[in-house]
Image: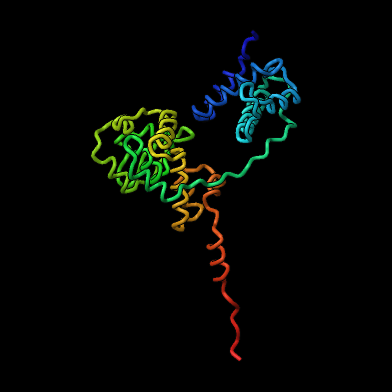
Length: 281
């Protein structure tokens, strides 16, 4: 078996030094290892056509092609790797096989807020740790990885200090009375572990989805409550930039899917445009 190229760990050390999150680095490590093993001569000796064929090859087990989101992730991982490997003044490779390849078209995301009846039913029937997960996601928009890292000392009435935020840097989320009521009497220490859960993002995500389906009859993910958090802000009149800050998005483009106006809102705005001032006859 051909040994893995030593460029992968070197690229990942560089990515870490650039501030890339551990989660992203792990994902790119897996993609690059897979590409290096499956490309005819590995990552170091490949041409444009071989990359195109590898990106578009069906999964060996399912025989299905990669989804557009997965294809985009693979493409940008390879593009970043080869940009690093051919950087001026410190190049590892002679040429960049990605240079003339066009990135996959991306599909604009859609907000996936839950119906009020589903949210109310989950809040009424869910037991801990899942009820706490839902409360944190629904009322402050926390992600699974952020919920897993929360300590009692991180939560006050007004704010939540998110130490394990997406991207790796600490962030601040805004508090809510429902969250404060749920955690104010808890002991010091990790919140998830105190209510019987495992403080791990994958455990929280997978177990929550299974619980919602098997125990409550809802085929939904915990992340849908974060979407619902943003949709409710929009319904209450919050503008794009308020939602961006509440969601802790790095770019306003990520927030746009939650800020789309409904037909009724547009119709009212158009109808309320001022008529021209007419002089009295």
